[in-house]
Image 1: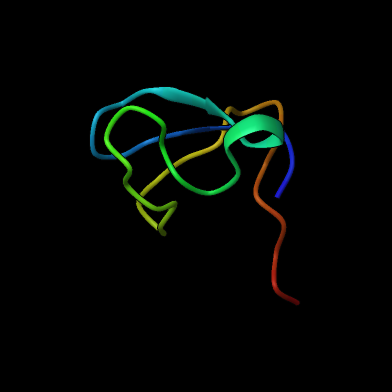
Image 2 (image 1 turned 135 degrees about the horizontal axis):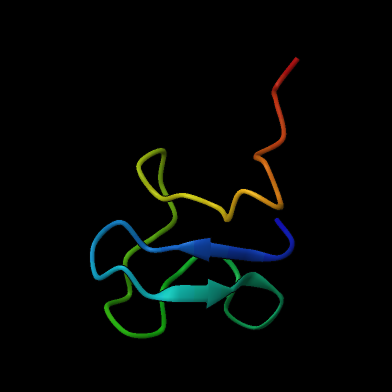
Length: 46
């Protein structure tokens, strides 16, 4: 994963270049309920 995502648990904006798939504030792991900003849509699995 690259870019930014929003933690669904604490709503922090996380830079995955630095933190990867875990939120530095609450240690929540990126999941299907977490979102990415509209400028970077999630990649499809197709």
